[in-house]
Amino acid sequence: MEQIQQLFDKKTVIRHSDLSIPEIGIQDIQTLSEALKINTTLTIFNLGDNQISVRCAQFPVSLIEGTKTTPIIFNLGNNQIGVQRTQFLVSLIEETKNIPIIFNLGDNQIDIQCAHFLVSFIKETNTILITLDLRSNQIGDQCTQALAQALKINTTLTSLDLRYNQIGNQGTQALAQALKINTTLTSLDLGHNYIGHQGIHALGKALKINTTLTSLNLSYNQIGDQGAQALAQALKINTTLTTLSLCTCQIGAQGAQVLAKALKINTALITLNLYINHIGVQCALALAKALKINTTLVILELQNNQIGDQGVQALAETLKINAILTTLNLEGNNISYRGAQILAKALQKNTGLTTLNLLGNQIGDHGTQALAKALKINTTLINFKLEYNFIGDQGAQSLVEALKINTTLTTLQLYNNPIRDSIILAIKQKLKINIINKKKLRCLQILCLKKLKQLNRIDEIKSLKPTIYNSCLMKYFQTKL
Image (tube, rainbow, N blue to C red; front, side, top):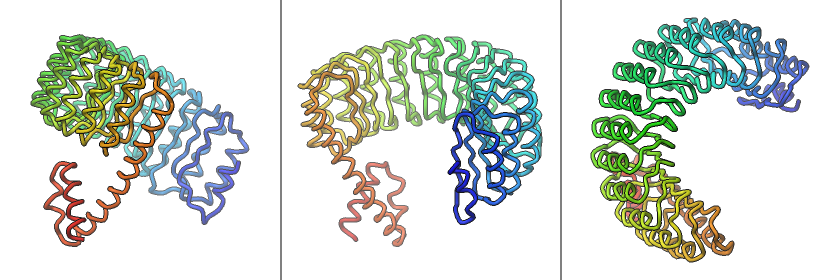
């Protein structure tokens, strides 16, 4: 293979080799091993989607011999590794001693027996395992409990992916106990499992104590309102979790309202994903009130939650005040042209939102015309999604007129609307001008930063809001340079 042959050149610096070609052969692996005795720069190996045999699985030996301190990334996803090869890989990586390891074993039919080998590996104190991806295996509760015991000892793992692993309440409760002790894990993904409110209650208690976890994905579990209430209580105390994903968790209005109240107190959460739940209008009202107080939430995902125009009205009033939120996703929420008109008025006053998603609603031409009018005034929105909204030529033409004035919007998605190609082309041309001008502006800002550093003036403006900061840079460039 050409990629392997390149490794024989000592003068060539290659750090990433993509060998994700189905059924890579033993001869290729043998050639690879010989190449790695010469090349000492390669640290990222992508051997995903191969039917790697036991002999082929020995490929990392030469890589480890040639690498002393540089982190190694092993991607062995979707290889049906099984018991024998998992045992071999674990014993092999134990020999790496102090070399940092990022390990992807997703989609490998790793069952309980295989996973126990990995647990022993995680307990190994001389191995620096940074990331472990075990998504889409059949680990279950029993092995998750063993894995949790290992996390009480391990002091290097920062990211653990356990999506699609048939983990229920027992496994989750064990992980929760581990989180009370573990001080290194920052990202835990438990999406697409069988976790109910009992497991979530245990996690909630752990989050009141844990001070290192920053990202938690619980999407596609049976959390319900009871689980949401447990998480809400944790959010009132926890000060480190910044990302929480609760997509499709059977959370209703009651649970969502409690989460919203927690946002009034929480000072850490940056991203909250409530995609496809049943929060409805009442929760939208509660979230709107919370966002008038909250000073940290930046991304709010509310797709497919039956918010409607009434819920949008409450959120719109908040957007007139809140300048912290930068991304709001209202896809598929039964928003009509009336809701779009309400949002348009908010966009004329809002100074924080950069991304707004209204895909899959019914705003039509009237709603689009109102939004276009807002774009003539708004100076912060960059990304705008309006696909599947029954927008015709009349509404689209109003967007063309708005883009003659607006200089900040760079992405406007209008797919699957009955709009003439000529109007779409005109919109793309206007957006292209904004993109080019944005790049030019950034180049000027970089020059300004360099000059301000030379003059020791950088501290005077770097604490300002981004829009004011950029304006100051441009003014300084124009008047002083």
